[in-house]
Length: 170
Image 1 (cartoon, rainbow, N blue to C red):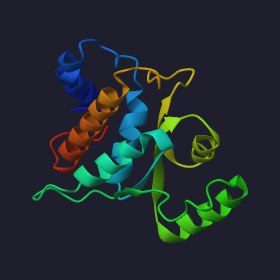
Image 2: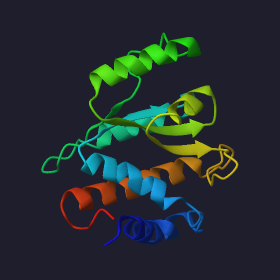
Image 3: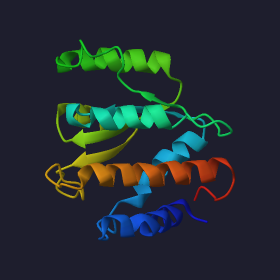
Image 4: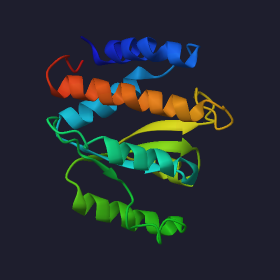
C-alpha cells in the first residue's frame, strides 16, 4: 500500500476524534519523504521552536520506548548547540559539526517560520510549519496540540508499518 495513501487512511480513522477533516490539504509527499529517509538508513534531527519543546520531548520519550519494535534514528537535532543558535553566523559551524556527526541526516522542523526554519529548509528536511502561507497548521488554533499529536501518531504508524514490511515505500 502506498505510504501517502496509508497515512491519509490512518488520519481519516482518527478524524472523528477532532470532529473535522482539517488534514485533507496536507502535503503527504513531504510526509512520506521523511519515512523513506529513515527506511533508507538515514537519521532525522528533530528541531522545534520554543513553544513546541513539549512536542519534541513527547516524540523522543515515546518513539523508542516500546520493546519489540525497531529502534528509530530520530534524535534531538540541536542538542548541545543552544549557546550557538541565537547567532545565525554560527549556523554554518553547526552544519559542519552535524555533517561530521551524522552520515546521512535530514531535519524535521516543527514550529513557526523564522530564521531557523529558513536555514533548515536549505538542507534535507521535512517541515511542519505553523502559520505558513500554504500551511494548514495555525499557532492560534486551540486544537493545534491535538493536531500535532495526531500527525505524529500517523507518522509513527506509517513508519513502523513500513519498517515491518506491512506496506511499500512508494
